[in-house]
Image (tube, rainbow, N blue to C red; front, side):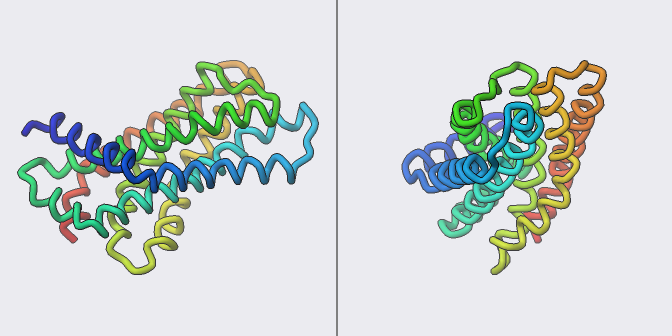
Length: 223
């Protein structure tokens, strides 16, 4: 089985399993909607202030919902014994990482696809701008690329629910800062010169952590 077919097989396995059980997506969706509603009722903001806090509120919501999904995704593999089966398969181990990573990315994008229209209605802000949506995809890719690797490391520990956010959030700070700044730039219609450095940081972060995960995933799953 070649690399792409193995990666696609892992993605298909995760998607079909989730669509049968709906454990992961429902938890992420309910959590994200509750956070948005709490912010909506807790912050009584005028129109100008909304545009300045929107990026921060959204990325806090995505971060918490994403960590919930990453933790649950790897926990299900361990509880069902699927990870041992994957490691015994005659495929490149990096195909397992990319399969899990892209499946987690799809789950996160599905939740974001529901949260963004809801947020637009509640806060009366148009979030459907090409540049803003591109930042959401780049930021989510960086977050799940490092999150999938760390979730694989922590899934064998008894305190995995606590340990993953403790390890993940400090490493994800650069991607959150860049995503919030770039998102805010698009929402406030700033010049491209002000947004470009944050987009470059997102691209570099995604590339670096995908390369690191590719190099160390074998060692992580063996240990």
